[in-house]
Length: 546
Image 1 (cartoon, rainbow, N blue to C red):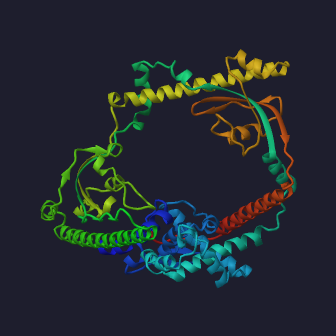
Image 2: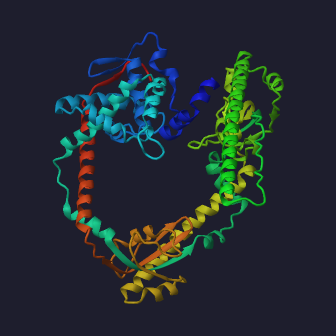
Image 3: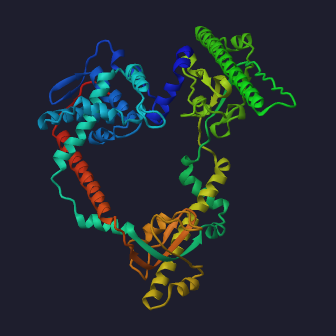
């Protein structure tokens, strides 16, 4: 239990935080093949049947591992790149990987051990934070943690080999398509240009202020959208925090004679620094001992708690002199300050409240308890769900202010869009008649602002998103007004005064890079279509329901 966690906390957090971005690395093992003693046939592919455990291991578990290792080529090729639980994606991954392995045999694509070895050294999961390959991390993941997925190191190596094979197969199957150099040159040239603009904005607040809905209008709006407005789930918990009791670090201040030589001063300073470092090291070692003792005590507590089926929480907490606190009902958005803390992790400082709101009042009493959650300063937090108030639809009075906010937002957005279209139409009429944009903008109550010349990579004072401005203007003819851009805070008018290409001696090399990217994209698309056609021609039958 906690002893195992204490030994491997850093690596477990690394795996959970870095690998799975929301997926538990250990997965839902309750449905894996090892739990099914009969292991009946579960799936037939072109007449060949595969057992329950084979489908679970080659589908769900293998896809989780591929997602964790970020093997995007393989996930995209097998049409199963959907982070999180997805039974259909699991099955597609299993079947498409069979088709992929058939294609490897047909085209003689067999990545070597050397290629696999080089590839795995580039995978983030096996690297230090500085990006260097870490053999120990690889060993720990390959020999310990993927076992919870029902897999071993060789299974992982084969998944890496399939990932490499997808790259080579994409080159073989999709490599015959030519990339349009002119298109690549236009792409590069578009990014190489600089533009000079006149812009003007209309704030959304101008329209929000004018929307004054009556209660009758709000009630009508609520009647058609009432299912949208719900209360938050609220919970009531009892918890305690087990804190380590560290001894105080005492350092004696160095005492020097009033008159000493510089050499004596340096010697004394070094001696004092050495003593301080030794004392701090000894104190750190003592703290580790205290941490280990606390972990052992908490581990024993959890074992006793489980043995009592959760009934002895109060008694066991009192025996250990841990103060048990019971909260009032609270929603996730208003977590009590003492519980609004994060797990003790540099890589995945997940909020404790996330775990509290995963507790349930199920038939099994221990589902109401958290594990020992490591928090700051070497402490552990353990909580029990006492009661909950389920989500329900709000009545009109409860939802009224949310309905008002949504009503105003919708009405203001519609008015903003109409205003922008009307102003743009009038400005375009004036431009066609030969009038200047600045004068036309002022006639519409706008305040034009000159920008540029600037490139896509430039930063402009007072403009948070220069790249979007550039993108809006990059395909508009000089002397023209772009379509109004309706943004979250208002509408934006962009008039292009001038566009010109900036000379760049490195343009040819960037065109070549663009061509390579276009070719690679073509290869991926063709290979994906080829894999889809193979899947369409494959007979897949479910023998057991998922």
